[in-house]
Length: 431
Ligand SMILES: Cc1ncc(COP(=O)(O)O)c(C=O)c1O
Image 1 (cartoon, helix red, strand yellow):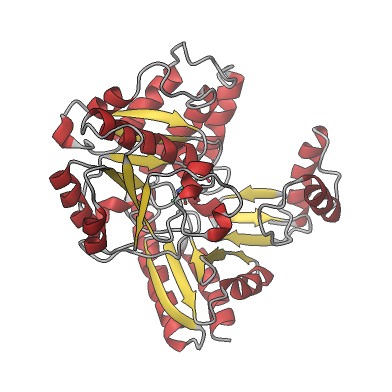
Image 2 (cartoon, rainbow, N blue to C red):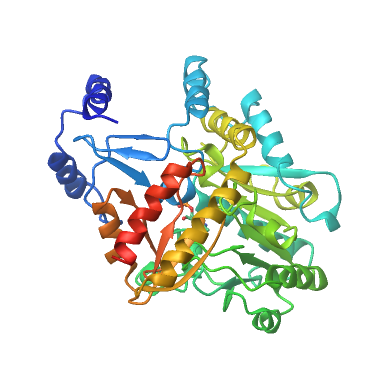
């Protein structure tokens, strides 16, 4: 991409009045008027396309963060962008009151319900139902509501006494209920009173989970692979063990697939690696192809109908036509472009090359990952040192849990882009 092309896009932006700002002015305005809730790398992106980000001076940066797995199909995917444009042109873009029906929501719900296997089959085989929201954390809270109501109504647990088992170093978002059970002091200190009803056990420790179950336990909330918590894969058999325990003790297994679903780990859903079927699945980020905030909680239709009736949940924008149009297109693109298989195949090659670098690097402690979700844990514990060096070489990556470099590019990357990543990792990790 030449600087000239980037400039052309800037002139389009000028029509709506903001591209005349210099990089310094943009940083200045954001820092003056925006909350300081993200540690930033001082890079101003003017355009994003495919796996690449472009700056004003024409620099191309390979995006190995992909908005924490939201941009799985690549930035500004032409088919998803076209669906968004059509939605606006066809006057389907503005929010409608959720008391009316729309075809785009209808089609999106059908697609999202049927892309998953029958969830919680012990409660019937009448299909899945979907409850749409906006950001991922909202759908995590929806799943928590589902499990709590299930505990109350189905298991007869006294309301207010329901307990959900969660895991050490979990990450499920940033709202009060969810940070209440975070292991990170930073996420919750000073934000009390916190929401009770969560019991934390170490990730991957099935015996600890068994010990934590009480008559009030109604569910287990798990990331099938941890993203923000350091990119850990649970020991083999762990998810199966959770499944068996949930069946035995009549509890709901809630899988948070927000970061690791939608093909990221080389399967459509990460739980498939162990052949288990959860009772509820939470999806977000890539479900709209990165074009609109959209998330869903999907469960067995019987459970959904038990837990939610008019008034017990809702969201003004949840499932609004524009987001659903993007979501439908994104799901179609995932199928048409075989993104899941591409993630598995490209991820295998990339991981092998990274393992080779690791074997020669004085800095690498461990390489973990599945598909195009690869973590490189560094011995120093400070992955950002290496991420900054990678950015100097025009590759964007960030840390997971301080100690691990997260390599999670859009699933569309090609062989040349794999080589681009490998060359830069070689430079910063071997020298
Ligand atoms: C596993 C997991 N759950 C939940 C969330 C929260 O999603 P959102 O930031 O869209 O609220 C994230 C975000 O990174 C995540 O990785």
